[in-house]
Structures are given as structure tokens and as C-alpha cells.
Length: 303
Image (tube, rainbow, N blue to C red; front, side, top):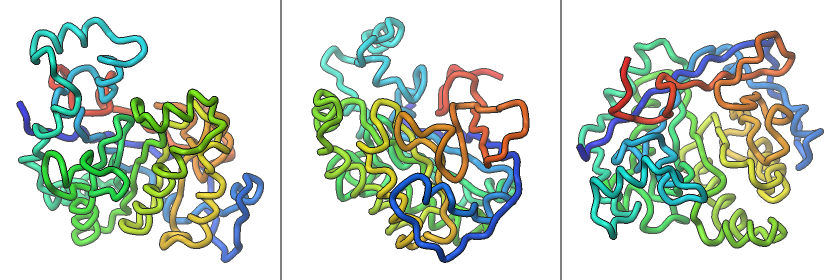
């Protein structure tokens, strides 16, 4: 089955009181950034929808981490066996690209469904750890939904539908790192003393997303291997809060470096399916899956 289905992931938002955003200018340090008041809309929006949809929806085996489980550091034997059984020996992950056609994708239908659910916002995976972009990224030539697969701006079409047909807030998930990107791997081999990947790829791409699609949630991920200084996270967030087109309304999570979860950001996610079990003073989010195993579509999932 080569058409792809997105799995809808509901996110429960819980806890504390709201603050209004001021006209204060923020400096690129956590003391200043953490002092920014939480935009009121987010505090009042208790339920959102998180969509993991991408190239991994084609093989739809295991999870959205399928490529890593197949060819990463410690490959899974069941994934290796699955690929040997179902695909030619010279098959690569990139070969899934043309099969990702999004034949049944109707952004208007999605928008209407989301609005009917009672959710207040929706977040789409713009790019997961495999690096495939769901929009015609300037910095991702020939590895995005306009050049390979649907030949369509999936992200842009959904953003337009959400804004034209609903009152939901539109947000984007973005993976900072990419498993097999050679530029990232070069920085990693240098113990992150070089910053070629964030300077030439991650940061320009994030700015393109914000300036073009104006997401009011920037949900960062893929932060855990490198410190926040490698990603220049504070500098990016200072720009986001001071100068970006969504500076007064945007919210971000806490995944901006291996040392930032549960410490910095407009809301804490700490870890997947985070539920502290008691009231904490900082805004937090429980991002959880419907499927116990995967964040994305998996036909083997049952009730």
C-alpha cells in the first residue's frame, strides 16, 4: 500500500496561569528568554493534535524510526528481515521517496475534522530525523515533498486549509538533527566543536519555515546529542521573540540542546508522554501517542 495515512496524535495541555506577552526585547541568554511571558492563547488551549507524517508512512513498519532501526548503529533484526523479505537487495531508504504520493491527502477534510474534534491547535512534522522535508525547502534540494514523491507542498497546503477553514492555531515540529546527514556527522565527529550543520542547514531552514509559514508553535526535537550552544538555540529564540513575524504569539518547547529539556522553553515536554503526576509551576505538555509503539501510521497497530 503506497498511499500514506497520517496518524493523529492528541496532545493534552495541563497546568498553570497565563501571562501576557510584553514588548520587551530579549537577549540571547536563557535568563532573558525564560522571562518571556507565556502567550495567553496557549494557556487557554488545552487540547491539540500532533501529526507524524512523512516518508516513513510508506514502509509503515515499526515506527517513524524505521530507517535508523534498519541501518543505524544497532540495527533491529526484525527490520532487517522485513526489508530482505519485501524489497530488492539494493533498495535504499531514498527509494521510498517516489512511493510517497499522498494520493488521498485532502487538507480541507483534515482541517474540518480537526475543528470538529474540539482541538485548539495542530502541529505537523515539517521534517523528522531522516531529513525529508514536507515543504519545498531551499536547504533540502531533492529531498522534499515538492521534488520527490507527491510533488506538492504538503505543509503549505495544510497550513492554508487550517487558516482558511478553522480558528485553530497552526504549528510545526522540526527535528534539529538528521541521522545520516554527512555535515551533521562531521560536526559530531568533531565533538560539536564545529557548527557547519546548524549554520548551513538547521538554522536557515528554521528561519525559512517561520518566515514563510508563520507557525505559532515551534516544536523542536532531535536535540539530545549536542549542547544548546552548538545549535545556537538562544540566538535563534531571541530572533524568534524579537523580530520574527510571530514574535508576539509564538510558543516553543524545551528541546533545544541536550541540557535544556525541563529547564528552558515556553512549555516543558521533558520526555515523550511526560506526566509529572503533580502540579508544577511551569507550563507543561503531555505529548502522547494513540498507538503505544509508534507516533506515525502503522498498519499492524490494533485496538
